[in-house]
Image 1 (tube, one colour):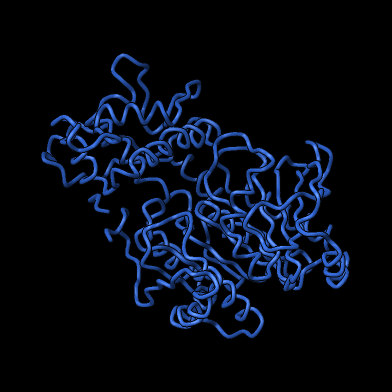
Image 2 (cartoon, rainbow, N blue to C red; image 1 turned 180 degrees about the horizontal axis):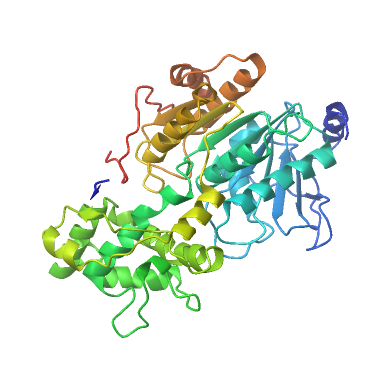
Length: 450
């Protein structure tokens, strides 16, 4: 192999919302272990006037926020956030996601998003916490007319898994009606992180400082030993020491320049994203290996031929090699891989030049769904953007509108129809529609250059 490149009727709930004051008066969140009842809270900036906001904590320990606009259209969007975030969760963590996707509320949808019960990896855990939040909303505000799942980044893996596990209730009724995935890690856990394992191997060949020769030696697939820690600042200092990332090009030594050139050329990861991807290959790998897989290795570079350096022979001869443990792969697959057996209308959006979650993951998901015989329920869209966490609000609004019509009418949209529908939102949001309706992603494992 050559390396080339996450009840009461609705009318009662609506009536209750209409009586609420603008963004509700601030209230104390339910303390840990006190149950799931949402408490009124002051809405963050960026939401429409007279939106009602709530926050609380589930019995399982996940903090959540809910926002319901005064002109609620009767559809709830349950949001699964990205990451995984390794620090312990906090009450107001969902606020960032609520503000980032405030377009949802501005378009008349209710929004509910939570942390997960603990930091770190665990797709099934996060999917269960997402499903629990749906039940909290339904119990408190009544069953909505429609309920959608939205997953962003790693949350795309979470939402897709939640749709596979919880879309249909035991009595045959729908818990959810549609799915929207944005920049989602839809390749599943066993396919999502190999490029970062390759990055750790290539980086260590050139830099020899993660770990340093005088530090405890460990296989780099571990991320870090179980009893160690490393901050982002500490990692950034090591990367700057070796490659000069963080310095102006004129300030870099010839060795730093050479190291950086080789690492970027072989891995395809740009210098601006180098620290971020190495951080995931450090702290997230530590979490996956030691806290989720019992110390077993799910990664392999045994068959990888590294190309693009100024001396590929020396690189391939000297790079650290490692092979995955079959049990680790099986456990990670059970937790995070996707079957493609979708039963709900599903729309996706992904920037072609996303530097964090490469657009090639959508090729993997499309093939997975095709193999399962469910392609009629999947519509993928792609944009000429180079961002990951936030794309154009006009595009999100178009996807939500198209998904809603698909669910209501049964008429499946196309990338062309979604792109055309997007134009009506450009004046409202002042943001462009940048869909590339003819783009089809390939199996490249690294970013596509703009």
